[in-house]
Image (cartoon, rainbow, N blue to C red):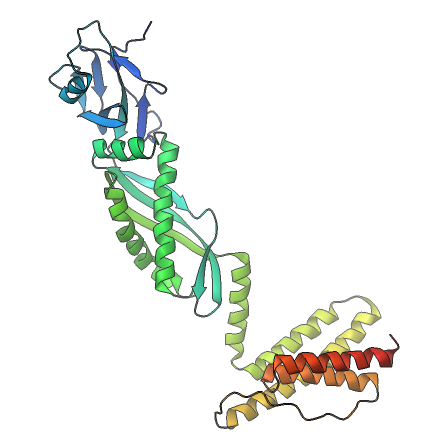
Length: 345
């Protein structure tokens, strides 16, 4: 026997429900004369066969052929008080929700003019209210098949995140510049997302971006860029890198670590000085078209130390652009083989 609902109402005790289905499962059995109680900031939308029909505003309503004409027309006749008809009622909250949460589930990858590529995370809040309950139910329930509040929130968050990702890609700004553009970003996302919300009967009232932060890998790249910027020029940067190498070697335990620290100090400082000289010479020379000259034939080294010096020199020449990577690979393989032979490996 069908269960006939004589009183249809929904009390939102949590204050978080955007839409609530009555009954929660299946279709409801209603009849002419049943009472529908709609509270303030609510609208009751009758739904049948995938389409939102009539809407009842706040107040107590009695189901009659007068106040739900579309439902009666769809059924085809006015039922007597004892004959039930099947439908669903969606109670839609029309008040404004001010603290809807959004956040990127995965990092967003963007082109960065400074770092070349950056990955970042973002989160914030947005405000919305249902402006057209019938359109909302048609688009969200009828088209998307969503009627649980959690599913609706997830769907709306996806729109916000999509628009934010699109805007960040269009701006082509470095992540270093983004903190000064938070309000502009929020306004841009709101403008981009407003039409999508309106098309679903929702008014997007506000969007706030609480944080846009780099991932751990991008944060390390930013630290490196900051260190280079604070140092000022390449020669000083090479000396800075040599000092870091000496520090890392000094942290090793035992006599071998101390010996390595000495080697790291000598090699790092020598490389820094050599790079400073080469960079200074390059700045003094007039600009020329980039070429890849063949290196002069070096004298054959006789000891392992001489060969190691030759290998270190190749690294500096490659960094300075004196030789191509192809020439570098050929010479490096040659002297590495020579070094192994001298060491008896």
